[in-house]
Amino acid sequence: MALTAASNRSLASARGAIFIQVGISILILMGFTAFVVDYGIFWLSRRQAQNAADAGALAGATARAFDETANPPSATGPAYQSALLTAQANKVWNRAPGVVVTWACPAFVPAGGRCVRVDAHQDGTNGSVTLPTYFAKIFNVTSQGVWATATGQVLIANASDCLKPWMIPDKFSGPDWPNGTFDPAKDVYVAPTATNPGTGYQVPNDVGSQVTLKEGSPSGTLSPSFYYEVDLNGGGGAAYETNIESCVDVTKAIGQTLVTLPGNRQGPTKTGVGALIAKDPGASWNFLSTPEKVQNSCAPGVCPDGLYHTISPRIVPIALFSPSQFMSLNRSSGRFNLTIVNILGFFVGSVDNKGAITGVLATNEGELISGTSTVGPQSAFNLIPALIQ
Image (cartoon, rainbow, N blue to C red; front, side):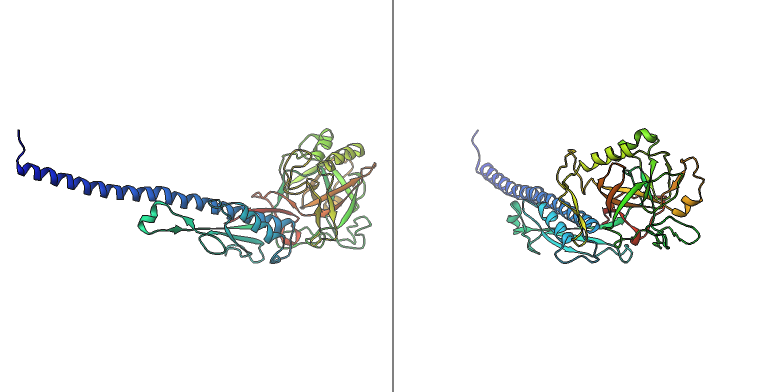
C-alpha cells in the first residue's frame, strides 16, 4: 500500500527525535565515563598520596627516635631527609609528590611530643603537578588534584618481646656508684615513673655510655657492673643460649617480674653473644656522631641472618631492676623474682672468655601495651615510632 504524505512526515519527525535522543544519551554516557575514569584517577591518586604521607611520617618518626634526638630536629637532618625521601619514593600517578615536612603535633599530644607531619601534594602546589583528565575535558575540566596528610610520633614503649636473658641494676646515686656495691645505708635508688626520672639511667645523657657487664651470682653481692641471668620463657638454663641468639617472642613489661637463674653460664654466654654479633658483624658504635649511633650496620638491608632489621640486630633490650629490691630479698637459693623497672637498649660490642660483655647503652624499639607502668621521656630508652593521625 502506498504511503501518504502525512505518513512520510510522521516518519521523518520520528527519525529526528531519535537523533536528539542518541545525542543526549552520548552526552550522558560521556559524563558517566568521565565520572568513572577521571574520578577513578582521583581516588587512586588520593590513596597513593595517603600512602606517601603515611610512609614519610613513619620514616621521619623512626629517624627522630633513633637518629636525631634534638627537639625540634634540624631543617635538613636525618629526620627531615627520611620523611622527605620516603614520601617522594611513593609515586602519585607515577610522579613524585610535592612533600612538606613539619614537626607539628596534633592538639591532643602533650607538650614536648616528638612528631613528624608530612603533607603529600599532587595538586600543582609545593612543587607538584596536577592530575590529568581525559573525558572530563568536554566539560572544560582540564585538571584535578589531590592532597593527603599524616603525622607520626615517637611513643614511649613499656614492653619488649625480645628481651635478652640478662637483668642489670638501674643507676643509683651515692658514693658507691659506679665502682662499688650498693649500700642501702648510704646509697639511694629512686625508680623512674611517668613523671619522675628518679636516679636511674636517663636519655640522652647516658646514651653512648660504654660499659662492661660482668656475670654475677644472684646469691652474692650487687655491683653496678654485674648482670644476672634470668629465665624469660620458662625454659630455664637450657634455653639461656637460645634466648641470647634470638627473640623469645614472650612479651615482658615494666612492672612484671623475671626469675633469676642460679649458677653461671660463661660458655653459653660466649657462644650466644658470638652468634648475635654474627648477625651484623660489620656494625660498630660511632662515638663521634651527634647523636652517637651505630654505623656500618647491615640495616636497613638484609642481614646475614636473611632477615630485615629496622635497626642493628646487635642493639638488644635489657631489663633493669631496683638495687634496693635486690638487697632486700633472700638470695640464698639464687632463684628469686626481680621486678622490671625499665628497659634500655644495649649495643653488644664483644664478649670475652669469662662471659664479660662490653657494649654501649642505646635506644631501641619496643612495644606499647596497656595495663602496665611506663616511664617518662627522660628515662625512655625503649621507643616505638607510630602513626597517630
